[in-house]
Image (cartoon, rainbow, N blue to C red; front, top):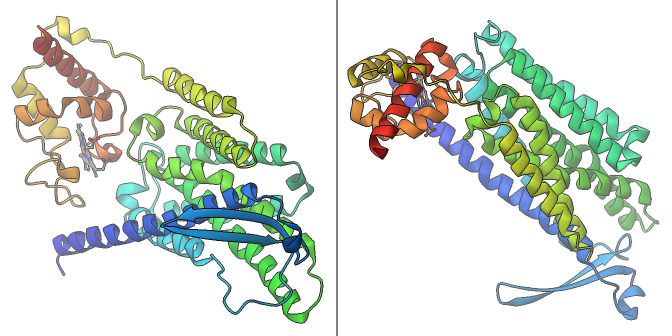
Length: 404
Ligand code: HEC
């Protein structure tokens, strides 16, 4: 098979895996949101239900029908014929995520994982760093969950947040910025799937087993399972942010991208807290409002410094010079006829073959090659800071021309 065909088929495989990953993640997080809401919204049941061992009662209407939900204090007297478990959402999200990570960042390590300006790693070294982070981070989380630390929710959350931020910093020293972010997201996702596999499922199997044998179930594993499930719930918004962050170079591409990740994770978990309280009837609008204010403060703090427009006074670059610069640094990929070995079709359909095409995309060019150093991709074409400044000047010139 020739290289172009392989690249073409790889793109479709990428699409398929990403699609499955998003669909399974929606199912998983949807179920997680639903059950946390359900648990927090249960009401005291009438006496006849309490006598049957039901501790919580809930009525809802959805899709044109009434639902009556009952939660047992521990377990029903006898096992129902069909019991739904909700585990494959978690497992399939993890499996599709692991496959996507492997395809993009490990098979494609040279384009997506290794950033020679940070560390000149071989493919296997880079993969070892990625996989090592996932395995090591997961082991630390599992040890922490089994330690007394877990009994202090706030402290536990704080320590985990600090760890995540530290790992993001470490990775950002060694691999590409996007890869660093995605690996932190994958690590949190791995811990979440691990919570299902190692904590929640065994507890549930124990419960079912006790009911079958007609003995009183041990409440301890069930409480642990509830705790792990709560961890997962607080991790959902941070993980979603990290997974979407790859579209936003002002986050991962920032000089302090690792700190931004930590701050966004805190804001996400805090926002989630508002909803968890609300389900219990505790309305604290300030939790959500303060999360939003923190978000706005972050936006202001991490704003890139304005660029020195020195060349404008000197006349700046002509259109031909800009086309030439862009040809040297960008059109290896962004052209109707790319010459890059990996990106054989113009990425995102973005093409810079003429001054007109460059002008049309100048806002995005500024965002990705002037204000951040996110493009050229991994700076594969070796663009210099001087060239970025010149490009920025030209864009500023075009704007003042348009305004005047
Ligand atoms: C080695 C290949 C490569 C080179 C060279 C490259 N890019 Fe990209 N570019 C990509 C890839 C891959 C994407 C799609 C993924 C993404 O959006 O990050 C992309 C997407 C883009 C986008 C569209 C996404 C958006 O934010 O709207 C812009 C704009 C862009 N690049 C600008 C540039 C500029 C400007 C240069 C030259 C200074 C450049 N690129 C050089 C690979 C490259």
